[in-house]
Length: 327
Image 1: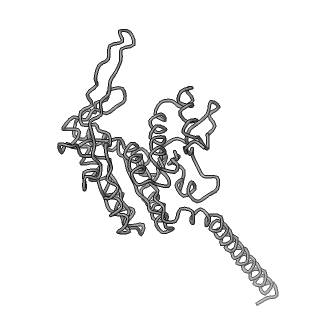
Image 2: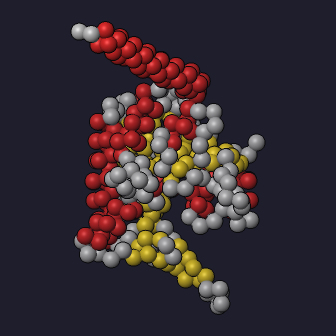
C-alpha cells in the first residue's frame, strides 16, 4: 500500500464523517422543528379537549384516487384519528354526489336535475342509499379503523337519528309572477336530529360516520344534502366547531382574497351585496344556521390542502373562513 492510498483512505474517512455529522444535524433540526410545532399546538389541543367537532367530508373532496385536487380517504382518516387521540370527539358526515352520478351512469339511469337540484325518484333513491350507506360509508369507516381509530357507520335511519321531511321548492316566473311547485321526489331536509343516539356512540368511545340519508314520519327514505345534515348534527350536539370541507379556499372578497372571519350579520350582508354567490350561498347559510343553533363557530375550508382540518384546529392562523356569532 502506498502513501497515496493511505491519504485517499484518510480523505474518504473524513468525508464519510462529515456526511454523518451533516445527517445528524439535519435529524436534530427536524426533531426541534417537530417539538416546536407540538409546543405551539398544545394550547389549541387543550382548548378542544372533550369538545365535539363535526366535519363534513364532501363527495368532490373524496373523489380522486390519486389525491390530485382531493383528500385521499387515508389522509383524512389520519386527521380524524389524531383529533380523537388529542381528546376531541369527532363526528364525520360525508357526501357522495359524484359517486352517485357514476353509479347511476353504470346502471344506465340518467340523473335528473332542476335548477341544479337532484331529482330523486324511487329508483334513484335506491341507488343513493346503496352508494351513501354502502360503499362510501363503509370505505370511510374502514379507512379510519385502519388508521388506528374505532369508527362506526350510521345513516339517519339508524335509531331514527335524522327525522326528515320532504323539501318543497317553488319557482316564480319573472314575467307573469306565477309561482309553481317543483317536485324533487325523495329529497328531504332534517326536521329533527336525535342527539341522544350520537351521544351513545360518542360515550362508547367510537367515531360516528354519518351518511346523509334520513327517514320520514311514514318510513320514507330521503336523500339530504350532506352540508345540511352536518349543520343540523352540529347544532343538535352543540358542537365546538362545524368544519365544511370543500374545493375552494373559503369565502373570497371582491378582490378574490380570502376572508378569514365573518360574523353572522357580516355573512348575510356579503350575500345581500353579491360578494357571496352561487354554491357558496347554501354553505354560508348552513354555517349561519349551525351557529344560531348553538355551534360556537363554523369554518369553510379548502379540503384540497393537506391536513386542512389540523391546520384549522391546532394553529393560530387557522385556515379558510370562520363564521361566528355577532359580538
